[in-house]
Length: 600
Image (cartoon, rainbow, N blue to C red; front, side, top):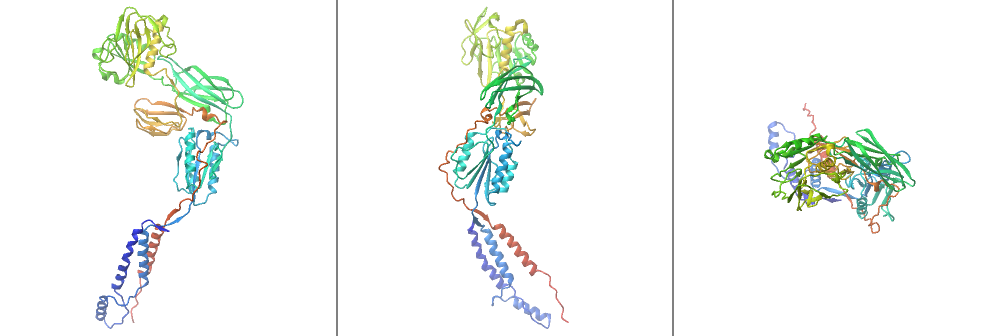
């Protein structure tokens, strides 16, 4: 037994004051008097008397006990008793969703076996429960009872995120080296590399399983005006025999395409879907089904299914108007003298024909035959009556599908070497198409004029124009979505995110969003039309359920167990209850009503 606040015992010095109070108090006696006057005189005389032989009644000892108990309660007494400390590590990562032979899942089997192990622990054990995904973290305090820990296991949810093997091993190493822990219960589909420490009780929830998996689902949106998108799907066969794997794609819930391939054991194949219709959400489903359905489905969203706003600044408004024939484009034209920077606020990209703004545009921009010597870009321009193309990249999205040999550039200017823009297309006397990034925006400049847009009447130039506008708009780049368990920064303008389960989470722009452990499509809403983000498992290392490396605890050999520190049980609540009981008991006997009988 000990005291947390022993200084409170100094208040015992008030005990003599209680004794003095009893010595000074009136001590009534039974006296027979002949009249009330004599009684009053005797009462006054005896009431003023002090000291004499002390005559303590039982109430004095009760009040003395109450005072001593109150001082002891102020000192916060406690009883120290030994209490085993136990840690339970439950693997709630995505592979725990794999089905077992009885039709359940590895996760439910792990929870049941962990609760059985807790039932064997002493009732006064102090238990801490940890989950492993998305990152290892505790879900109870360090002094939970086995019953509280079992309830926490029932409330825990399995995650769609993979486990971080290094973080998992780090948690186990930390627990094993904690000399205060008496036992550690680990429930996982992963085994522990021998030798396992004696205080670790490992619960294995399944052996190797054959599995078919989707590794990635990548969409490449077409150029502006395209009515289809391309998709690429990687699939894997983690089994001991070759398998014919078939993937079916749906677009906004409607069947869109399918493909199949024979995949050898342990191999990865790629399926191409070149002409998927435009849609908001795409879903890929892999067949045949297996015991781990999570990686047999994947989601993707198309970034190109939106309207692109173009600001066209030129003395020739008709050139800008020609772009309106491209589906998915809105065009606002401005004369150079009427242009102001505020016009850029509602534009996705800006096109400046024969002119340059006075400051760097705050959006992606294209400059067509820019005037030389401007103070912003300082283009070095050499006019030419006939432009000749001599070089271009063969595999770049900017030049994809363009037949430069049929491209008639007519007159224009060659652009000299630029400090931060590189020549993507070059001619006999310099660059013809420069591209570069500055202050988070992409800029391009051409020494030729691709306008007016003529469509099929000038197919090589039209393809180059669409490629160029797509690059500036951010289209044409492959998008593979996001991974489960990986946080991301909330974009500007987003005020709430709806998870795949329908949970509506208020957020603020710039904060880190961590509720990404669910596979599916997240909806980001705020200003304007909501945007979608696809989140997938997308981890073939996690999907390989036949070859699972064991978890190695680095400090297993040097781990030892020390006696657990005693647990302090406070006695103050019991003392307060006893004080209240004594006060009530005294009140019942001292202040009970008395019956006074009159003398005959």
